[in-house]
Image 1 (cartoon, rainbow, N blue to C red):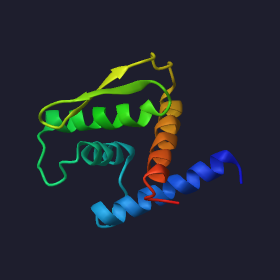
Image 2: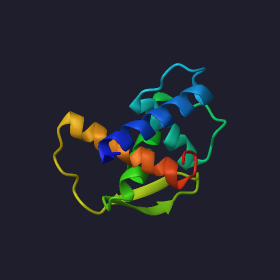
Image 3: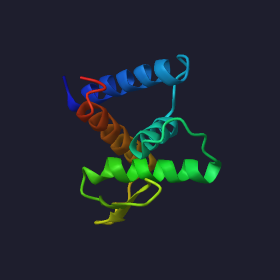
Amino acid sequence: MSRDEQLKERWELVVTKLSNQFADGDALDLDAIIYLIGVQELGQLHKTYKKDHKLDLMHIAICKLLSSYGYYELEFVDDDGWPHYKALETLPHLKAGEQSILMKEAIVNYFLETEYIH
C-alpha cells in the first residue's frame, strides 16, 4: 500500500471514529478535529468555550501537532493549565492542499501515538 493510500485509509478511520463518538455519525471536518485535539491537550473536557477560546484551543492543537515536525516546542503551562508553545522554525509556504495533507498526516500520527487508532 502506498503512503498516500495508507494516509487516506487512516484519515478516514480517524474521521469515522471521532464522528461517531462526538457528532452522532455526522462527518467532522478538519477544523472540528483540530478543535477536539485542542480540548484533549488542554485536558479541560467538560467546559463550554467561547469563540476566542475555541481559536486558542485550535492553536494549541496545531502547535502540538506540528511539534513532532520540529516547528514548535512546549514552553510552559500557565496557572490555568493552558499550554504555551514557542516557534522553533518558520513554517514553509504551502498551498492549501499541501497544508491539508500535512495536518491530516500530523493528526493521524497523533492518534496513532495516543493509540486511538492502530
